[in-house]
Length: 446
Ligand code: ADP
Ligand code: MG
Image (spheres, rainbow, N blue to C red):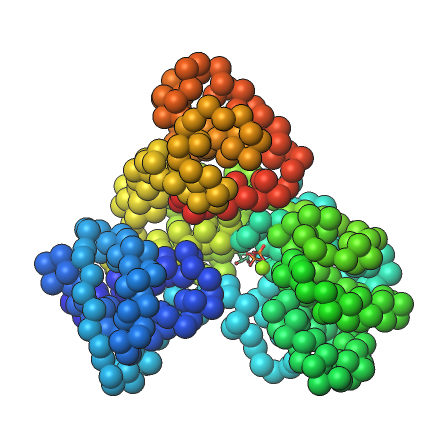
């Protein structure tokens, strides 16, 4: 039983990990542990009361759902405090060793590159063809052709993988001095240098690099002084034909409060986006991951995952990991029905269970309007937009009929719904900020 409990906890925590930020996961979940399931009460042990309180007030439902899912039945949670958390500290998480977190970095050099991201294991499809072609060109001619190289796209679509793959390739074949850095670490360093009046040192430090890769550069938004400092570093490197590679969740011009001169620098090289891959590419990626993990799996089951509800590649991998873990517990190859139950059902069930009220609530919260306003008659644009987004999401995510949506939003005529859906579809094809906002809402609903 204890083995099973451990296995259930592994699956559950890998699910939790997919839902919350890496940082929060590390802080709150690395030292807690599922210790028993009695009837339908799952008991979790925490290292201290603070962690227990925090999880109960912030991650109760996430944790409960993840454990219920992994266990296969709904459970209630109970919390205990285990002062001797040496036990908890020693849990090994074999599933996570295979995970893709940037933190697991080989420390044998100071490039911060994770050797597992290579060009060879990056699968090319329509969704990333241009970004991939640019990457190859850069590997041939670093610092010369596309400088900077700016990659943008939603979370979990392969930006970090591709950037690191370029870095790994250049480090290996050109013996290049590469630095990969998260924008958080980069900003911290700059702030520190600025405060200590040592900006010269930091400029020099970056100038020594042949390739500078900064991830999630959108976080530089609004940080004026650091932007100024970065501008100098950028120029110094660019003038010396050092390759600069940046990734962001949106194109340069959509990064708010970004100095105009930086926008134009970012746009001055190559800007390429990465999108959600089509089905064929999703299948190819999953197959590649199975190969890497030495996991034999039925083609039909891979298809099941690829067709599921995952909204990005990281989620696809999460489903695969869940399947592998379950198969390990079962100690036998899973058949299609069993696999479907493990991956498909839980995901699909969630979307079906989604209630229109959940959609209304989240939209009211995100757009700062009241439910009354959404369902009311006012035509001010600050209310019309969220109202139309609500109709769009009810229709596309919950698959409700036009009439049902019209009833929920209290419109007399269902053509209003058709109009709203068209309008939002048009808008998101040009307005990346809105697209991003809607994707976030969808992610949250899922
Ligand atoms: P992002 O930085 O865009 O959020 P990541 O680069 O971290 O996304 O990718 C998430 C996961 O998906 C990683 O495990 C990565 O290896 C995998 N992945 C994404 N795109 C591809 C691809 N084209 N081929 C193979 N694996 C991919
Ligand atoms: Mg990334």
